[in-house]
Picture 1 (cartoon, helix red, strand yellow):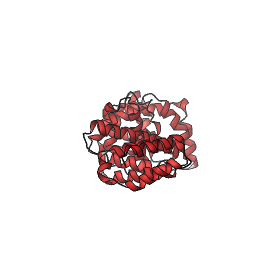
Picture 2 (cartoon, rainbow, N blue to C red):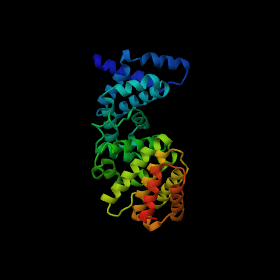
Picture 3 (cartoon, one colour):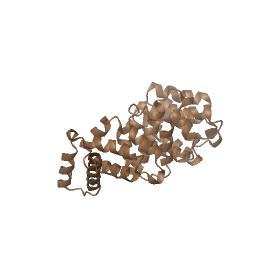
Picture 4 (cartoon, rainbow, N blue to C red):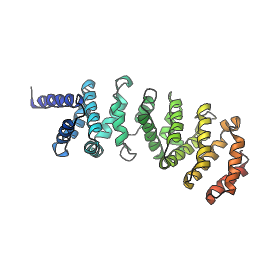
Length: 301
């Protein structure tokens, strides 16, 4: 057995020990000690994970589970190293796009969510990457993970300057899991904090613009999800204390009202009209008043 084989066997023994560890003070101290950047363990695990992917998926999954366990137990030590490793975005992307769905470890999505930035993934966020995330939506049960995947897909979409060529909207509009994607977007908006709402509203504006340009009258949202979306927009526009949120919500409402889907359904039409009338008279920003009046003048409602 040569030295590289000895090192690999030692690394396998270590990953097995990590994977089988219970969360005790002694284990946490041990993990912190072996995971210090000066020891190079995390970089070695990432390199081996990438190298073994094409040779032995079982070993790759073991390494991924060990990385996930380390991250869950000592995130303050592990996360900075994952984010600073230039190979890790490529390694995770390759894993997610080349591994069968039934063989994927959930930890891969967890770590992807934690290290993702649109800038850091710009060279690997290709069509295969987007489709792998869309593929995953049908079987991921963890709310935190699937909402984070929606957030990743929105981030990739926003990097596209041209809505017509938006890789996320083009892929999702024809994907078998498009129903899950649209449903989870609405769920994300419903659960969003004030800081997250505007990002989601901006994405929805892109969705409706894309629908008008590229979907030839087809609907991005199923009827029930569309009605829930209208409910959430009505709530947020009427109840928010943040004027930027209200203004963006009104911009999104304008896009919704333009759709053939809304014109056919006319969902909460009277309530929306009353809300818009109230906003033109209430103590809200001038921009909110202007958009509300513009919608009323458009005769869309």
